[in-house]
Image (cartoon, rainbow over all chains, first blue to last red; front, side, top):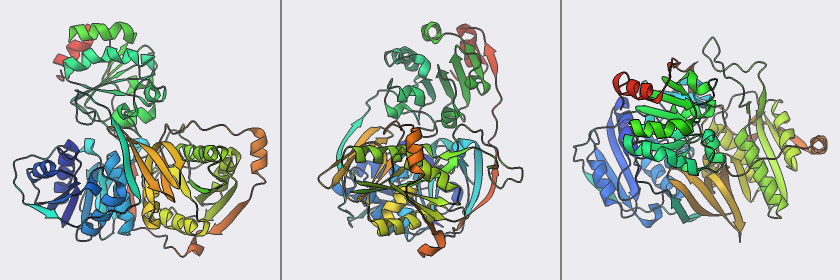
Length: 308
Length: 249
């Protein structure tokens, strides 16, 4: 078995999702090669070489890969991927973007959002927004998988795998990067945070999300939101937790003013401890919360911040 | 310019999903079905581009049994001009769907393909990317804004860290995210008019595409249920429980 993992990084550093994909790959078993494709991304390649269990790092450094354009990354991965039994990437917006393109070019299926590895050809994944869990078996020569990071732990570090530089450049020439607006935050990333506090429609407006700041600071938490809060324009899209937003599984998830639509539950119900604060005692969120507090969030939040 | 919009018939998003007793899948008997929400957004975007004068014709296509004609009529009522039903009673995976759509692209030569980023049943999020690969087109996935100009399309994409804008040569594939637009409701006159719009039917096996997949579903089970917990009376009690019982803070 030979596994190729496409690293998730921002050119300067590796994202924690990559460590989780390596952890998933060790459950398959076999040599693990990590591809770091980027631009001025030597630091990320060095970090990848330090992950325990990694046999080799392939480093493709070219302007064509700087912004992870699917057309260029997929061409590179397709060429390399022919020699592997498994190709894995994180089920992030980056992995979801380029990996199906790779699978189609290799004429194999992709298995999306894998949450458990049963064997080298059998995988578990949620369907219907997590309301059903499917076990699927692939007879394809190359198994192409996106792995849900929240379902796996992080691989250890402390390795020194060899880094091989790739010189071939794949620039499909049909797409180009124009701009990006990344949300700047001092807080941990939603998908990596130990504690997440999320606000919903009950927050009433964007300004009121500031009420979550003090609590997040005290708990070292990331701040999330329900789809209703994002659709209403309270907060940007990258804060959305749910079926089509980010999937999180922190130690502690605090849902504030969130009713608990299926769509939202799909993104957070694997959290270890769930707290719900909502003034509607009938809100569905209470059916899955470990601790529910039926109260007005505008009274509770300042009190909670003070008592932490 | 012609816009092709592939759409899927799925379980209505309000329906509670039940796994069948034999663990073969999800019970769809007598369940309300609907146009996949992301596909509805794709149809709406195509209609808006036509209304803005950027497109001349909107063709919708769906794959499945005769039942999918209901969703094609919905798309026609929302403003699509004509429909193609690719008939099969097989359940296809994304790769087989993408291969059939690639044949439709070759026939129809659209300037733009707009489709939903994922169907809410299989949650695959693959078809658009696979279609782009098979046809050699660029892809603008998870779109929250689409702008056409000078033979190119600029797509603003919802990514994990925020927003990214890419520019693609046409023809291109765009997959829709939730905030691209708010789909309109079909008016009664438009629903009546849709019944008279052209709807062609072609057999899936007439496309010369292998419809079999190498992936088999071994079983489908309900997710592990979470036990509802306790209600606390005050913030002080909540903080105490989190510290001493759950030990997470």
